[in-house]
Image (cartoon, rainbow, N blue to C red; front, side, top):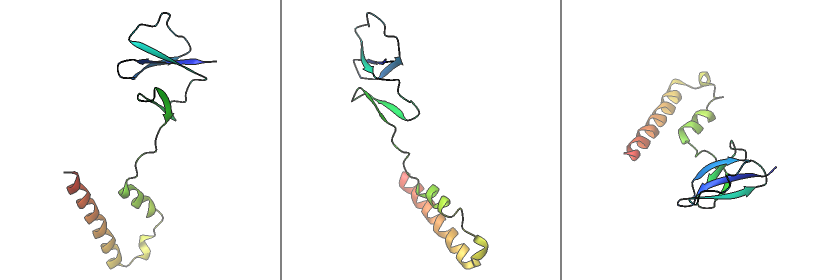
Amino acid sequence: MPCYAVYRNTDGSLSSVGEILAAPLPLEFGAKTLLSEPDLSQMMWDASKLDFVPIPPEPSDPVHDAVLGFADLDVSALTQAQLIALMVKALKFLVKRELNRG
């Protein structure tokens, strides 16, 4: 069953999505007919395209990725010097990242 995306003509922002369309539609709104209701967990409204587009992946966080990369690391296999070196590298990275935000 078709559904409708109702958006503001002034800026293209999405107002509503549904199977029922007001008639007449107020002049400040436009409507786009969709073949089916979009999966809002995977799609988002793009006001510039007046259409639904896939939600982009979350930007990668190097610290998070590094932690995940070390999730299976057996730290008991590291020497004390290796463990300290790893912690120093991580700390330097975090400090540098915070200073660059400033």
